Image 1 (cartoon, rainbow, N blue to C red):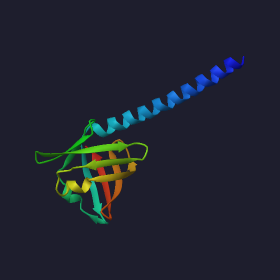
Image 2 (image 1 turned 120 degrees about the vertical axis):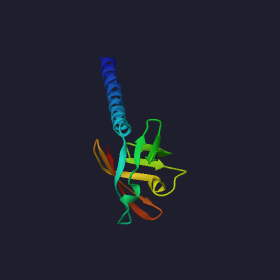
Image 3 (image 1 turned 30 degrees about the vertical axis):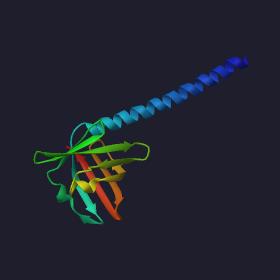
Image 4 (image 1 turned 90 degrees about the horizontal axis):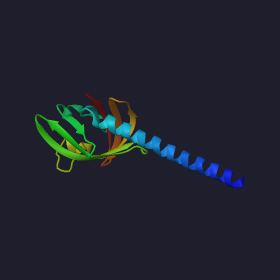
Length: 137
């Protein structure tokens, strides 16, 4: 009888752990699908309270599942990298060969609000408080 009870609790523990991992994987897959389907554009960018959104006018961004992101304006594309951390609610982006304004996107961005068609995030970059809103097209 003790063996049956032990087996029952062991199976229950394993199935609970497996279900939790499955749910986490489904959450990651859903987030990845939202991020990588469609193009995004900057609807707000402020630097220490100064609105510089117009600097990003004309840019669209395509996030890809391989961890690259392409910023395109007037048929000129610049490739960078991105990585999401679902648990920390952050996205890290890097455009290593970019000039302004794309270089302003380099860093770790803390997501403060999001939906299927927008993301609001902030970052502290070089002692400057940056605020960003991306909208899906």
